Image (tube, rainbow, N blue to C red; front, side):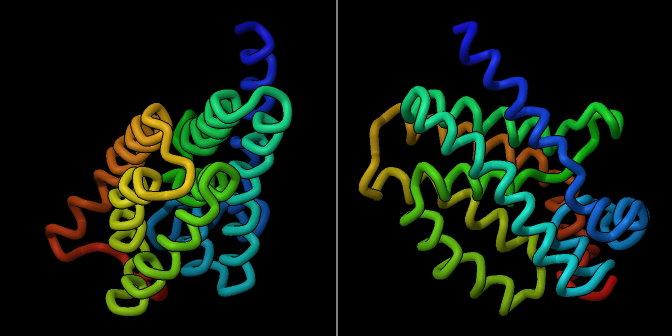
Length: 193
C-alpha cells in the first residue's frame, strides 16, 4: 500500500494545478459562477480560455490514471485518478475549495473507459448543452449515466462499476449548489451570466 500512497500524493498535487486561474486569472473565482472550471472559464475568459482549461483539467485526470495503468494495473489507475479529482476539488492553496471535478473525472474515464466517455460526450453532454445552454445539466446527466455506461461497456468488472458509481455520486454531491439553482431557475448558462 505504501507505493500506492507515494504515487497518490503527486497525483493529488497534480490535481491541484490551477488551470483556470492561469488561463483566466483570479477573476474566474469572482465572476460568473465563481467555479474554477472549463464552463466558467469559457463564460469569463472566452472560448480559448475554456478550451485551455478543459484540456488542462482532463489531463490532470488522464495522466495519473495512465501512470497507474502502466505501473500497477486498473485498480492503481483508479486510485491515482481519484486522487487527482480530489486534488482538483480540494486544493489546499484555495482553502480546499476547488472545481466540481467533472473534466478531471472525464480524464480518468478517458484512460479507463474511453468508449464510454466518447459515448457520453456524443449522446448526452453535447446534445444537452446544445438544448439547454447549461453545462451543469449536461454534466449531471453524463455523470449519472457513467456507471451504466461502464456496466454495458467492454470493461465491466463489478468493482469498476461500483467505483465509477461512487465517483459519480461524489460528483453529484459536488454539484449540489447547481442543483439548487436549477430548481430555482437561477442556474448560469454556459455563456453569459
